[in-house]
Length: 280
Image 1 (spheres, rainbow, N blue to C red):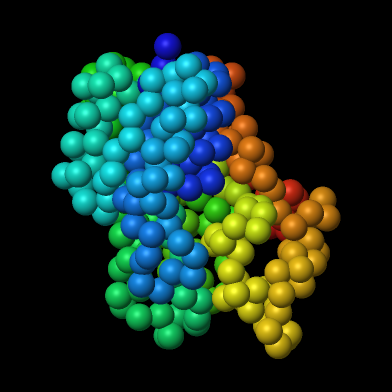
Image 2 (cartoon, one colour; image 1 turned 135 degrees about the vertical axis):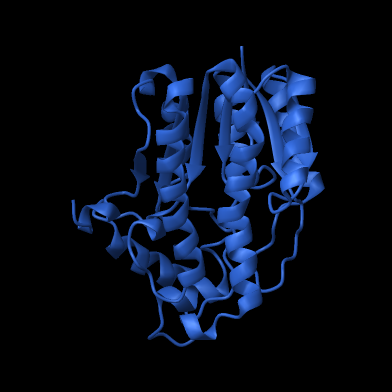
């Protein structure tokens, strides 16, 4: 029986998909989310305590133990407490899935405020450092553990108007690679998953809001979601607007499994071919 300390984003669609996928494979789950629905500059709602509880109940219905923790990854002491609570209630931490991520207002670098920069970097990068730092002593003591960090195709190529987000997603890859080098001797693996656009249907999300429509269709006045979707299709060799959360969850499942026991320090792209445009 495995225990998964599933770091932030636990209250939204990604958290639900990853938690349920891993629970079906026999993992007990610790869900972590700050449950702040409104962050200044965010164009889509964050998770709520009600949504976090709904996912906890769904995991329990699968037959696995599940705890939910309301905590902010930007707070290092809170992450240590969250790891300790997970160990106290579930017994151990075998895997860490660090999926904290936020994107705020779009704009060129000089138009991004220092406050926005700090919010994005503190969440997307420092938050990853905090959660890894919180679980590593436990994994080192066990001499075993898996860490998977969510990056993005925006961490593999430059995209305009999201320099803060892109910088954070490039940076977590460097953090992951260093972690893999430093802790491999303790039987700990570390990898990243880098998704392209993830479909969220009609629900407001990072890629489904009016500001995102304008980002993808800058030449169109008052662009619609349908117009944005058509633009997204041209980005991907497979001709799709994006991938589904289950596609991403399957990648996490592989990296956390024994099938990937010799895979560490790597980035697994779930990009519908988008990454094929990059230099090898």
